[in-house]
Structure formats: structure tokens, C-alpha cells
Length: 213
Image (cartoon, rainbow, N blue to C red; front, side, top):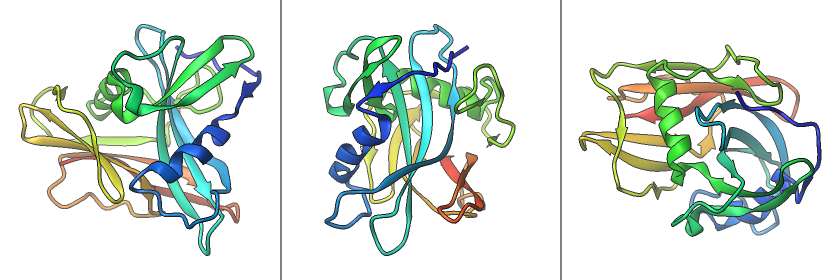
């Protein structure tokens, strides 16, 4: 069970993301720096209790129209070996000290728990509350076997990050640029996770966060 601390982060998560997002190939903003607000998300528990796992939706209002990004993040008390390319940054946590923040698409703990969510073996948790399930996060999986990762690394496309799964016939796709109310199962998909966030005008939106195909 992840414990949510009411404390400070320096720099904040949004400050880390504001510097990191423009370096991504799926970043859809303009030349100005992103103006980010946390719009929603959820958490998953690490069975070992060592790694914080958060799926954050951040909305950028710097351009002509808002853009909603999915940032799957992991928080670690020490560097993840071999994942320097996936480091979003470091932050000082008021209780836990230095935390290394990673793009979770490249963190095996997050990927394993996301696959467990697809299969119904992990329960999504509220983003900002301890030990509180988020029943608005829905999942579906039509496959006929356990989902396993491979040694292949995740790769970015124009709107997503993709990771091949074993035995080589399934790909996990994390949707990076979210589309409100786009809930239809992707043609040929074996499963999907849908979630919710708040639009700048205050209304609620739902959309697909991750797909198996």
C-alpha cells in the first residue's frame, strides 16, 4: 500500500515535467514553455513497497488549445540501473529525502503492475489518498494467457510509447497525448485501460490511457 504524504517536493512534479515534456517526440506544444496543471490520474501499488507508481494526467494550456498528456511516473529512493535515459529528474521529498523520478514506461515495476491491472490482479488507487481504490479506472483484457514483458526497450511514436510483450505477438501502448471521450476499443486491440481527468473549464473527461494490441 502506497502512503500519500502531505509534504513538500522541490522541485515539484509539474516543474520536472515542464522541463522534460518538450524533449519528448510526442510533445504537441509550441515554442513557449508548457503551462501545466495536474488534471487527474491514479496510482498502483508496488508489491514490494519500494517504488511509487503514479499515472498523472497533466494539461498544458500554453497553446491555442489545451493538450492533455499522460505521464506514467515512478519514484525511487535510489537510481534505477541502466535507466539514465528515462530519468525525468530528481526531487527533494520533505519526508523521504531525495527521490529519483523516472518515465515509468521504462521502469519494469510500473510495467509489471500495469499488466497486472489489465489482467485484474492489481487494483487502481486514488491519486492523492492512501488506501483508497479508484473505481473509475476501468480495464479489459481479452487475451488467453499471462502478460509478460520482454527485454526490448520502450520506443516513442508521435502520440504513444510502445513496448513489445512476450511471446512477441502483443504490444503495450501507453497513450501519451490523450483525447477526451475517445473510449472505443482500438481496432484489433486485446485490451485497454480507461481513466478520467478534469478539463480546464472544470468538466470531467474520460479517455483511453493504455492499449494492448
